[in-house]
Amino acid sequence: MSRSAHPAGPRHADVLPEGHYSAPPTDLNALDPKVWARTVGRGDDGTVTVGGIPVTRLAEEFGTPAYVLDETDFRARARAWRTAFGPDADVYYAGKAFLSRAVVRWLTEEGLNLDVCSGGELATALSAGMPAERIAFHGNNKSAEEIRRAVSAGVGRIVLDSFPEIVRVAHTARELGVRQKVQIRVTVGVEAHTHEFIATAHEDQKFGIPLAGGRAAEAVRRALQLDGLELTGIHSHIGSQIFDMSGFEVAAQRVVRLLEEVRDEHGVELPEIDLGGGLGIAYTSDDDPREPHEIAKALTEIVTRACEAARLATPRISVEPGRAVVGPTAFTLYEVGTVKQLDGLRTYVSVDGGMSDNIRTALYDAEYSVALVSRRSDAAPMLARVVGKHCESGDIVVKDAFLPADLAPGDLVAVPATGAYCRSMASNYNHVPRPPVVAVADGAARVIVRRETEEDLLRLDVG
Ligand code: LLP
Image 1 (cartoon, rainbow, N blue to C red):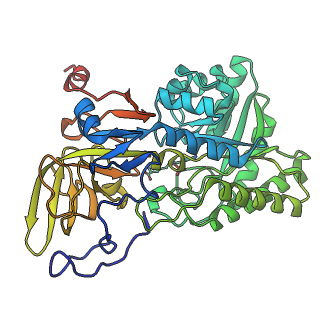
Image 2: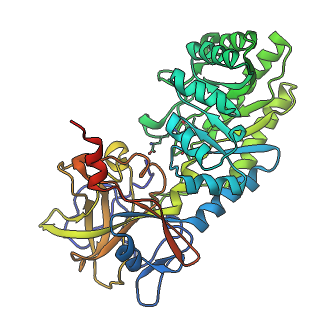
Image 3: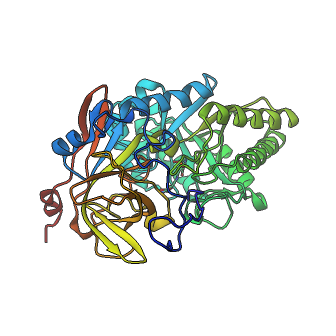
């Protein structure tokens, strides 16, 4: 997932085991601003602070493990996306990356729209006051009930993903006596350079309607015929954790070609184009993501150029960043439980969470970094594998990372860049309750998603 893959020279152990890791950093106490939330720093006493609060205090007050989210950073990143695209485009935050009512309120205040893809996400958005017309409803298999709720709430757009769905949404809209704004999601046939499980624009997969074979053109034909629908544009999402803009370029060009065909066949110029999300973030120091203003400039130019060539008015562009807004703004705070040195192999550091709070390492081979945060240490670097407390050996949080050799039980470590797809994909594996999300801003910390309890787990068990 991350692009880091540099074998290190021998250091702590005589021979380092095989793996993908960078050379040990010169200063293990340093915190790379690329991967840490913006208000994170190390205080004079060596303890890491966020929003001015020492992590030791957060651990005492809220327990570990905990996701710690830097609200100031979240708002700044959301605003940067909003500003970068300007008033003639829309930014839909992808709620699947992480959604809670506080997040919905921040987004609403910062002028972003919201992409939801389930009834649960829709309920969260509406209950926190996101205006329905700023919500886009996604999904490759929306239930009849979800479609009805979305249409009756008055969501701004439903992104149609299949032929049966075109009919279902049209039918529901007619029943409710409204005309629903919709986009059609197409697969453009691009291979995004990312993990197979999160690449979504090649044709052999479950999302969208292929441009190939005239399928997308046929979907447009049908949508234009149905009076319950107002087709406003075409949607393409090519995948996730992407650094290379060329995939977006090809996707935009192909979508614009479809707009051209639609104009030629039906005499209508669809006014919107959505290029999805998928912009990569730095999980380790080896990743170099682009800034929102560079991405906005590149995408706008690509679409404008393609439209000029096709003699189409440039449609209103929207994007759907999830990870790039929330990913870098949080870290997971763990307490070290055991340190096990396996001679000639590596050192296993067990923390009090694991694959239940971060499945990404096991699922996508994702790379993360980790730091000792409760104190400073000048001990030599040791190559460590940070593992969780779950009953399987694939329960790895950070595959290869350097930590100080004097690391001991009771120390706090933190894994940065866990804001996206960690809490939202968390599970109760081994009946481990899910950690809370603690938001920090300007010297104050508050729980925005509380820690799950064993009582919560038992409440569901009604057998
Ligand atoms: N729009 C659509 C239609 C999407 O399907 C997604 C992500 C996004 C936007 C936001 O993508 P982002 O900007 O966050 O990359 N669980 C995986 C990621 C799955 C992404 C699914 N769709 C992970 O942990 O990497």
